[in-house]
Image: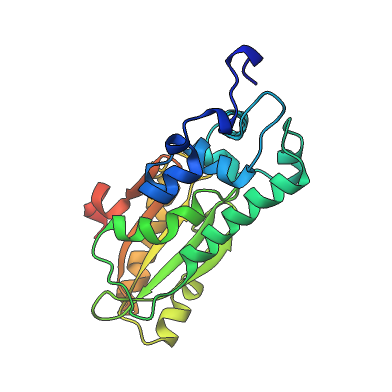
Amino acid sequence: MPTADLSYRIKDIEQSQRPRERLESLGPGVLTDAELLAILLRVGLKGYSAVQLGQHLLMQFEGLAGLQKASFQEMCRVEGIGPAKSAQIIAAIELGRRLSRITPKERFVITSPQDVADHVQYQMARLEQEELWILILDTRNRHLRTEQLTRGSLNSSTIRPAEVFRSAIRLNAASLIVVHNHPSGDPSPSPEDIHLTRVLIEAGNMLEMPVVDHIVVGERGIVSIKSTHPELW
């Protein structure tokens, strides 16, 4: 935590600069991560504001991505963050996760790898194991469904193409996009990722259910294998 000489309290800040007042007047987008956390925390420690406590929490978990992965017990062990504050933070993160999974009444159209990232990155970047998901599309590239298929190290010898395409065929879909995550945070495709992509493309062509792309997700961003290895298509 910072030294007491540099500490300040929320009420010591000019009212227009306090996090809650800034959110009300300017919107949540202008607030820093620490200020947003301060609104959840409400109060800090003796001699330290909620903003400083939010900064301390972000430092402990190396940013929002680490905070998203932290368990209830891990948060409780941070000085100044007890069970009540831990529960508030985890509940807010879970609400964000659930909100990202809501399917809009009007199906969205996927036209680029970024569209895929906007749909899955919030959820997949925090996973501690590799998971393989598929996004199932109709003839207009509109999203029909997202399904989680496997968990654990991806290997083309253990992933059955029939499982990958089963739901898409049942839904009479037109195509699908394969997505998986790298818990290391680096989305660069591995040789095994390339081999698995080749296997699934060949299976999709045989089934007349083309694989549009294979997206690798990591905390550092995403990589479209179609963009980096167009020769596979």
